[in-house]
Image 1 (spheres, rainbow, N blue to C red):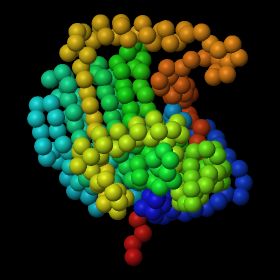
Image 2 (cartoon, helix red, strand yellow):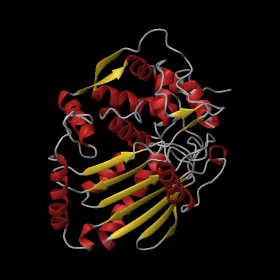
Image 3 (cartoon, helix red, strand yellow):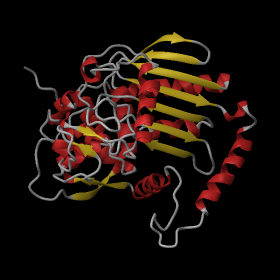
Length: 360
């Protein structure tokens, strides 16, 4: 299942080494970690332009406690491969298809989102597909938020290699297939960012690296039995986020929108190295004004925030809106100028030489 991705994340020994002691975490300077990340990416072979984009996306995730952050870099899954030019191969006033030329997915997505925003501001809506890449597009919430901060509604769907089994099966066919929806509400946008799998792939990689078990109901092993050992899960399949046919079908929809529609591979996706994503932008002004939409949307958001809490607080003492907890943690970290980071990740970043490609 994860053959190609396992080959990447084990390439520098980080994820293959079972720790003998609990992983220590300490506060580190955001400025220092940002610079270390950029230098590690440059050392691994990225251009400074791409390194800046990837650093921004990884730090977005890390600042918010999202497992799509620096683990991707130190685990070796972002090692660059020979790549070409990012180019638009089909285009209309409201659409475009981008050939990524095998560049890092985050750099391609940056161009796709910028193009979709530009077109939507002119025409009221836009849809941009991207394909011919085989690497992470990043925590999709960053793209949903970018679009929403431009006063637009954004939807982003990303397909990736076989990791998730359809409901009723243990055979991996879908990717973790995340999607994000960004809504330009005030004072902060509502940003949904979720994988359609029960667990993010890099959540499993992190658990393996830290020698921790995973929840018992998120994955199957290679024989179709529940897996709590992350190594067994990486040889088997993840389950859909709700462990039912509904979540399974949502994963399929992301597969078809992000993959089939953009011309991405539908089988043997890892070896094919042709993943796909779709970006949709809508200007609320096509139905009125942005301010009217925001006023109406804020009525419902306020109703949700002020909804009656269950007597036993079985689902928590507060009701959170999409992205609210991540926003709060990010703001706290930025105000302090530090973030909590595992020592393994921090010292791996400081050892820039480990990221330099080995020559034969």
